[in-house]
Image (cartoon, rainbow, N blue to C red; front, top):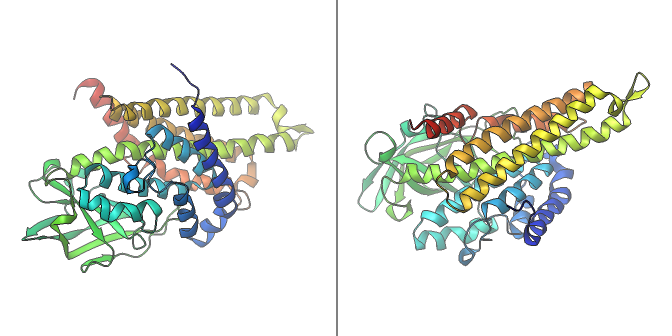
Length: 379
């Protein structure tokens, strides 16, 4: 058991760190306040190989591991958690096409997704099916060489701005076995979008309903076989959960480092905050929680790389622990800043708003507990 990163992994981590500090961190406040989708910054990230992190090299991907990916996303989230999270979703879409798509689909879509000349969105959630994803109602009826899609997807990151939508739709019986996966290109007749959602955080990525009304999609755009969609969706989420966990750790680490620096400067009652033992104990607990979550995350990422049987359970455990811990650490850091932490002049309130949704998306943390408990108890 070796806890040291390889030389290559240290280089990958440092590249992501340098990019986050130069191309994301200085602009994150403006992106948040003005709700800017930072297309140029995302394409700069793609130029470093971050548009197809674990996509095969023959279509422009970087062919890195899941452990490499969580190192990258933790660093990117220190620059801007919201933008890093969108990049995670884009990568999830690209990987699903790479892993399950036909050779023709891989060649047609992945080169542009890896360079982020085109952006991708993942469409699973619906207005009436969130945690109960297998009950989705969007349906796809086959007619000769096309499917006709009808239905609505909700809370879609990149909605209206993305070029490619990876959509789960029902082609057969109720439940998970009747779901198939399709690629729908922006501009396809019958594809429209709702108004942009007004969110607590994640302001640097657009979010909207994606609506299908007699939307004709070629049979060639189906990813995998009919009935494999739910399996594909869930396999994508294992990796997505790891990335969101990493984004929570990155955002929390950023806030903790700023808080430690603040405590060394700020005085109350003639004493530095850093010299109050009770406050020092808080910081010790925050650092311990982040380190424990990071180790859990690395363990889960390594399990997914090795395709261990327990990988889904470990990914759920890591996601639950890291996103809960990350939010609690940021909330505690805000408290240690007092009134200043509540002001938009300081970045902690922004990170707090961005990290809150990590406990909801990619499967709520209640569902993470359900996954773990079912696996342990054999239910």
